[in-house]
Length: 612
Image (tube, rainbow, N blue to C red; front, top):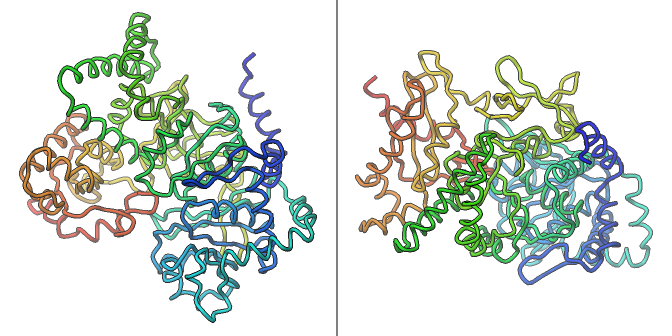
């Protein structure tokens, strides 16, 4: 019998009341001792091995002086040592925090000083070089652990190699194993489990502190909504500084004893998907946009005799997907036709891509164009949106394969309450809402109001069936000189739907109409140029090429046909640069830094309004 929502929420809460990271790691090491926990390349750690290495490093960090409540910053790529050191800090009741490896020295200085980190774990010489100029300003910092022993500066007592810390800890653990086992017994669900810094699109990053209850209630509630079996494969490819990967790659993996395949290089992601054949996968919008672009190119290159059956099957599956995504029933005759197309064409295609086991594909972290969802849905790759933020431990609303709406981000997960303010701002409360923000004095300050509601800063609408649609960020609404409020993310999503476009910036705040800057995709644009027989493939040349301009004018015209007059893009410019976190136009979570872009392209933008 299906549980009522109230009973489901009570069940989730009851389970979350009992769980902490050390308890789950112990359970997995005992019940699934030899089962794989982490695989990176040809290296695999079983659950027993992961816990044993965690125990050794816990003792090593303790001997180094890491104490309860202190913060530990990690700047390291996705690799098993990252999981081990994170788990070890938690066993000491310290608070681990992963810093993005793309941070500049200035950003490193801000995060390190604000966090008051006493111990820092760095990967190698590049990270040491980035931290070196700010070390003298960090009064709380006691020790710096470096994974690559060759990168440890000679004669500096603050630095120690990861291997030395682990070896010392292993010796201590072997001599007195009960010290580790007794050391974490007082950890409770409401204690901190991690901290992460927001991406800082509208100001300085904030330190978001999560509890064990936050982390595991999220895992429990999502699994209650879309269950996956125990010990199935999963893939970790996002940085552990990203709330989605921290939740999925660490906490959900512990809760379900998943076999996590670590993908450190984005270029290896599709081959790894084909090998691992995961039942669930979260992709940021850019991943799905690139997958759609790649499929378009492959389909377009097929001989007509192979392309036409695929397009016919795609049309059938798309019609079914659109009906489901609008809450309507799929007629039996269409169901039959789709089933035949599935068996004949679509299922073999997904098997070739390694997506044949994928029962739940999701997208979040930023808006994704509905056109991308529909294109993939036509191949039977049903990508469903979720919505959340660091302060909600990741996913707060969810679309499920049995209950979804295209263009919406789903319904609240069990236990989460949601309401809209008069201006449309979304407020949430419930067990996944974070403990608070880290203050400069080390205290954790609540981020909710007296009634427990968190103001998310996102603007949305609720339909009659309870599905939430995000329209924009409250602080990012464009207000034209005629007083029209415009959501830039919607326009930008329409423009990014074209494979040529890597990023798009809608402009119009204080101006009489909307314009846009388009940055070409550094991978797809040269491929497009080759297919068109163009002599040059450089982004600078393509940005000026009449053929590119003509193609993008068609894109803008198609977008304008779907927009109100106030929203329509009156003019646009193609910039010769690709935007990225490394060059400063995007945050580490690939969100636009609007103020940076507006300043960087002030002259280009002025030219777009020169005749007004």
